[in-house]
Length: 151
Image (cartoon, rainbow, N blue to C red):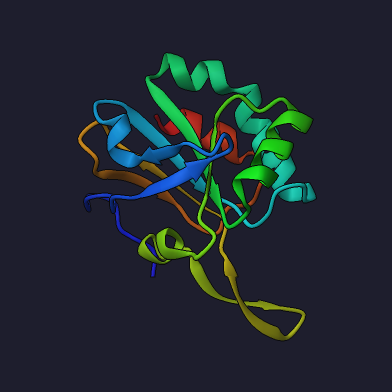
């Protein structure tokens, strides 16, 4: 179950694309656009990441940090960043603990086959660490622009 706006964002510490530990508390006093996506190097996830990269300066001008989270390894994230010139943080959640905390790990139904997976979702977390907005079941096209407009 996704978290609601107004709730405190669950704390976490995960490894980034450089193998460094990153915690949500590291961004206290800044807005965070925390987006969860299924897999590096796939078409939809690549388009979404490129969209955030293209608008990164505008997010920063609004005082927001962009952070992507998936189950991919830090090494895979590094390759993804290098291949597509991504200059924002990607975090690795291999055991899915943070995905569970944020309600992102859900049953999905594709072509009649049910399986568990990441439901593409974006949270905007305010400077005090509270969830300001939730964008559930994201469709990639136009999403980044909607998040930017909402800040």
